[in-house]
Image 1 (cartoon, rainbow, N blue to C red):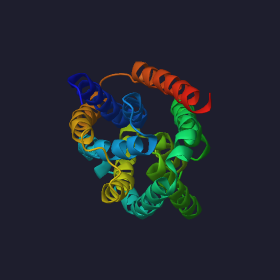
Image 2 (tube, one colour):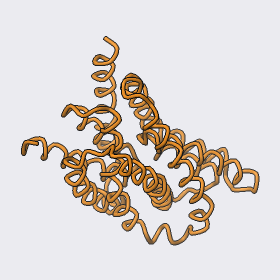
Image 3 (tube, rainbow, N blue to C red):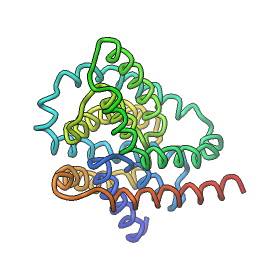
Image 4 (spheres, rainbow, N blue to C red):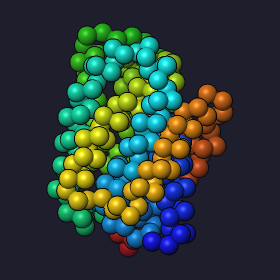
Length: 254
């Protein structure tokens, strides 16, 4: 691996850590960087999951005060996050490489669209579902299980899905919601990462470099979220996501 490649992976991971702390979508950056450097789609996805895991932990530390005020939700969604993450990771490695490569453009586009509509979905969820009831909590548990399956399988875009679930339950403090979202993402990815490592699906030349970048970006992003707007960073991720979708579609379908 050349120094230029190492630099690209590090910067992509820093950006991913920042974006995951702010709103989500970081996997689009790391997955895209690995694909750009010639990595296979499944290994790129597994490596991204493992590399971004430390950054998610660092980001959660940055939101620790906000999360402390919503401890009850940690208990509610911890189990479905673990179960779904395990199911999704098993499904990923059971998918033939060629099949997943053909699916990758659609998955990236889906994640990018989710990222684009995040603000609208969250606002409507809060307006339409102002509080939590036992029925809503049960439905949200099932929704989180499905989100976690998708998260273990691909991962990009799960932030908006989890924020929507929390909005459905009536949460409105965006910093607390981001902190909870990061905790649930961490729960999903710890199972997925462990499975990917045990199956030898991780590129260990790339993962440590990206993990360092993700830690810096994750903790810094949590602090940055309190002081700056997100519009420009979000716009950059959307552009990257659409560009990667086009490139992957051209590679796989043309």
